[in-house]
Length: 360
Image 1 (cartoon, rainbow, N blue to C red):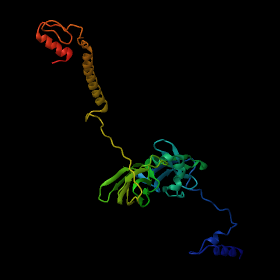
Image 2: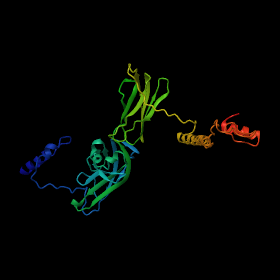
Image 3: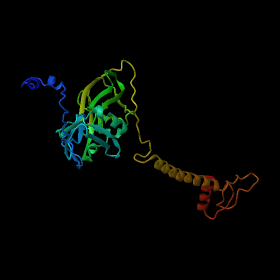
Image 4: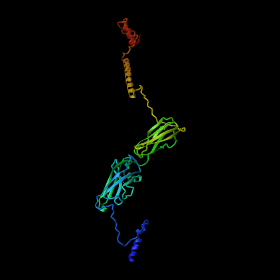
């Protein structure tokens, strides 16, 4: 009876098909110790090897977030949460500086060989803090795996992928005209553009008149993150003007169009800064210095002529005093009636009277 009772009790403890095994599993039998199987995932004294391959091709300019796919192959062990670690290393491509690591965003599970690493704004914030240059430099992306089987008498294996180089785009490209923000009076108008962009090539502002003619075309690109560029557009004619603000980057071009209404000056004088140059030379087409030289030479020549004329007049002998009553009036037929000087011929007398006394 005792044997039958024990045997019957043992039969009653066996769960029926389709019944829950949780209750049966909670009982403890005193018939002997349970036998546990050795984990099949790990074998002592086995050399472990691991390889990892990037399966996602990154674009030249990769927008964030970005999922990097990694495929792992392990021999001499298994992939599980106890022995395996997967992460991605980021390096500044220009400076060669290590910017940190990002761990896989999936739990390591036995039998799973493919994993994704999410490179999003939150995951990349520490890397961006260590390497601000990756916002304008390329970034080296390496996949890494480590399988540590040493606790079970095995070895430690690591694997690393080739490098994916990409330029991360951390935020969408935006652009807007900050000034003027509405209607503006005629005169000098300040232009200021606001934009978020990486790898900027140009920021141009083109304004056209109502008739279609271009009245302004210049750059509004900032010279630095804290150095905005403010351009001045002078416009005295009221009207509605169309503008196009274009931000060009290495990965995208964004045009933003709008209008600016220029109002009359409301009786206030409008001033325009302008400069006019005119050749003030006496001789057209000749510089002022050359013209001055020519005038100086001409002045010297005229001065010399005047000086010679004056000098010649000063070199004439003084006219003789007229004859006094007590002096003889001269003798001979050809004697001068003024100075009494005698000449051989009448012609000589006449020439003497003309040159010396001014008599014809």
